[in-house]
Length: 355
Ligand SMILES: *Cc1c(COP(=O)(O)O)cnc(C)c1O
Image (cartoon, rainbow, N blue to C red; front, side, top):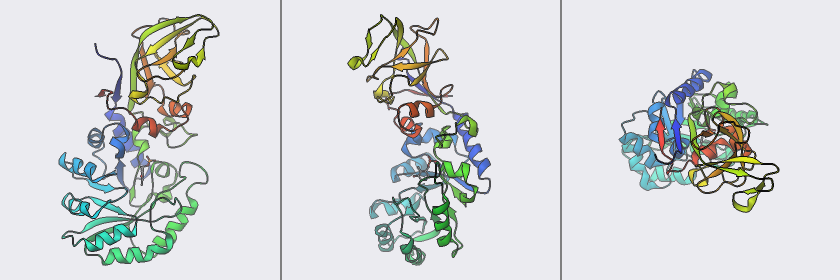
């Protein structure tokens, strides 16, 4: 038998979650966001399961090319656009739409002499202050795109900083509407949180990411309450058991010390697999289907769990680190982060199986 750790990917859950997104935004087309290796789930696998989406959103040209070479014919959008003029010919060749967020990109398009027109998503900075044209630069950016022979369709785009929490999207939305109302152009605004919570943002293309993977974009609402199903289940087994006496410590630094006799299960999963090293004692773990807790520091290849109260638990007992039965959102919260980071960090050494 090989090391028992694996990531189980539920393809039907991906399809289900796409249907949930569609149910919220029935008038919109969907860019399934599959950047970062499909949020750790495998880009091509994810694209295959989400092939019912009208488009895929990725970060880089090489991801777009990989999708085309795998035979996908849907629209593809580069979320940050191209990084250099040397990418433009391939964008045209592979029929990839691009964000244009900067004057530098605009100039590259104008100078390109491309024989084919690219679809462009003109990104407006409505308050996130990360990428996008400032409000007062928008009219001239749009005019230049429209005059540029290398540009075909133009869609207006923005990204929300707080669709998942207070203060919400109202200010950014009002800003976007002020600019967009003068033009009859398609719009794309909504990430998962806005897709779920703010119908007024849906426009022509929604861009859900995290919800497709069955995780909640909201700190205060569980994925289950949103009708989402977990896609990745990270599962392993207990590979050794330690009987602790009162006062015995566990793991590096001995940061956990038993205050009574305890049984500790050693689990084949560590930070080199993508489990967060900063997860503290008390982080939830499922052992043989029973909720328990992490003890002490996570090491590179192993972590320790309390199995004192789980009768019958021992070597070979199944362990769920996150996924079915234990929302990744809860594990992430215990580790002081968000599900996105845990899912994206799944290490290449973890075998993946599809169900
Ligand atoms: C990653 C990303 C998304 C998806 O965000 P989620 O919170 O995962 O739904 C949407 N739009 C842009 C521009 C992104 O970079």
